[in-house]
Image (cartoon, rainbow, N blue to C red; front, side):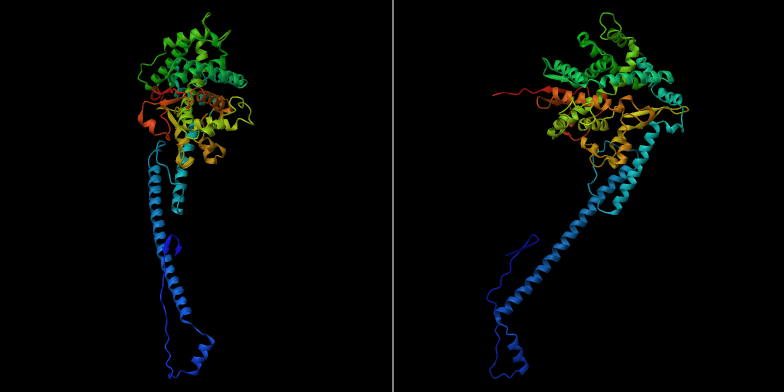
Length: 493
């Protein structure tokens, strides 16, 4: 029995005998007898030679059949893969990008034609990224634009926030002095917060533990909004939590969320919330109930500082927490990555691994899905699609929609160019120099430890979200309102 390339063959010859008859009286040439004497050949030897020849012929035939089958199978695979790849690439090249496309590209490209198509797709993605960057850094409006002109284009695009909240900040004003004063206060607040991450972590954990007391379910959107607001109060204003009324925190955060949603409708009915004004007065100016001692700041000024940090924070924290802790199978590597939080925060030598959690969260779920700028003349604002740049398959690869913090081990130049969660240039967010990644990491880890997958489960109240664990979550604030963390009772024997 012989095996060759998965094909079993059996060759059996029996009773093979070659009988040579020599007639005694037959006269053969002398040279024949001489050759026979030199090369005597028995019947057994001849049979073995015939067997070897037949076996060789049979194996050659089998090899030929196998080669043809293998070649045809490979050809079919190549054609099938190429067709899928070409279809996906053509779909991506035609019309606007669709970052929510759930079909991923093949891992390998079979020939030079596919490589050419990848180059074309990457060139188009690069063009779109450059366009988005030109909007964010104001170069779309012309070279060397003066600061006041840049502020004006940004303020016009954010004018709805002035109506909704009555704030006058760098985001909503064209005044250079307002811009500089805002950055001065923001940088001072960030410097103060960077000094004590352990304190902010304890504030977070204490808040979350109180949220669980007497409850079998935690309303996640409400919980995270309140958590982020409390942490901002402590980090920016050194609020006295002993005097803080939890019901007011909930009312303030609910009203901010309501006003934000109303401001996006733009139906002419938007006006400043009187309820929000009263709540903020209680927190910052009421002589008996204020949580900020000796604050030389009005409640409106305080809101101007709170909104940029709080509003860009809570959704990132919520979505990153759910994705990292409840929609990943490899929890061991996550725990290893963040095991030194909060002690590692602020120490560049040891915080790198932990901060990748926030970086990947901000890639999939940027604080601002789009950044808006006004046109120099008239017309509606234009926008840079930050989320699309963070999710292009042709930039980030087939796993662009997956949560993989390790991708930040080694970004390509194009990926670095496509990643701008804190805006760009001279108008980068003050939190971009480390504070933003640290506070997101600290809050997400606090959530993961207090509302862990080992002691509770996520309830989306949406069968599709429950099943599709490998896809990004919806990012609309009104889409998150029904999500909860439900306590799982563990029976002990």
